[in-house]
Each structure stands twice: as C-alpha cells, then as structure tokens.
Image (cartoon, rainbow, N blue to C red):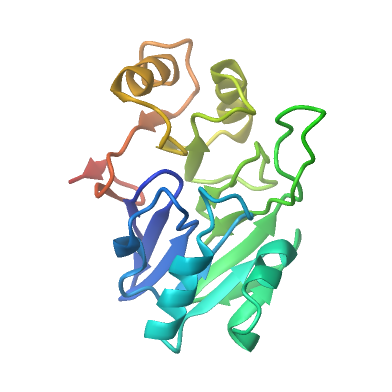
Length: 218
C-alpha cells in the first residue's frame, strides 16, 4: 500500500492501481478525489465530510462507491446503492481493500455539546484511521493515523493512546488548524524529543507520501 496525505484528516491509499480515499472534507483540496475508486467517511463534521465534493466526484465517476455511517449516508440521499451505511463490526471490500469498522461515537468535546456518530476504518489489517475518536483496535496495526489536534484531546492523551495501540509507525492527521509553530510543538512531544510513544512519528505535509513498511517519501 502507498499512502498520500492531503489536507487535514484526508488520506489516499493506493494498491494495485486502485485508489481509496478517507475523509475528504472541507479543509481538503478537490484533488484528493482525483481517480478515486472508493471513499470512506468517518463522520459528518465539515472537516471530514464535504457533501458538495462527494456529489461532484460521484457525478464525474459513475463507478465511485462510498461507505460511511448512517448520518452521512442520509445526507447523500439520491446516490442510491452507491452509498452504504456501516457500523461497528462491519467488514467489507472497497476498491480491493479489506476494511473493518471500529468505534461508534465522536470523542467528547464538552458535556454540553451533543456527540455525533464516528466510525474508524481498519484497512487491510494494517492501517487505522480513527476519525475523531481515540478508538483502540483489537488487533495490532502497522500504521496509525493520529488526529494530533482537536478540541477534544490533549497531547498527553495522544501519547497514552499511541502507547496503548502499539503501532510500528504513526502518521499525523487532523492538523489543519495548526500553524507551523503548533505542529512543531506537538511533533516535539510525540516525536523523539518527547517522553516516548513507542513508535516512529511522522508529520507528512500535504502531498507527501509513505509506503507501508517504509519511511516517508516526497
């Protein structure tokens, strides 16, 4: 597998000429969906889900398929069987990738703010995108996509989360609201200068790629 980081929480995974895109939201450029065969969406928040972008991609590619939770599926009404609602425990194949669904709810932002549904995706048993939650997979994963900045977590919680998951490497996502100073501060705590997360930490700029089992490449 080959992973490319796009804006904020969006990544594209490629294998055998097939392209799977996760969470192309409002902070992601439209190029993330170029050539996509399938799309996964973790939840309904604008930074993970752009109805306009997905409808445009579906119009341009009649073969495009989308898997997501019930709330997002309702907002894509009219696309028929091209959209499949899934929940925790589901397993399916998307664009040649084996996908498992883990998790149920978005992390708590504040008790006064209603929670929305959130599902994470385990791809080919090796790559985990948790969306906006710190869901711990029940299997070992090679690569964890770590949401490094949001109103619902602290860097200390992220350190403990990575230690619990125990991946070989971590790639930062959910960084669209961080400036360069903030990214450096977070990276210092999660990387080699921090207390230790037990995994290699990578902060990929938009457009950079990494091969699963290898170091990041431009």
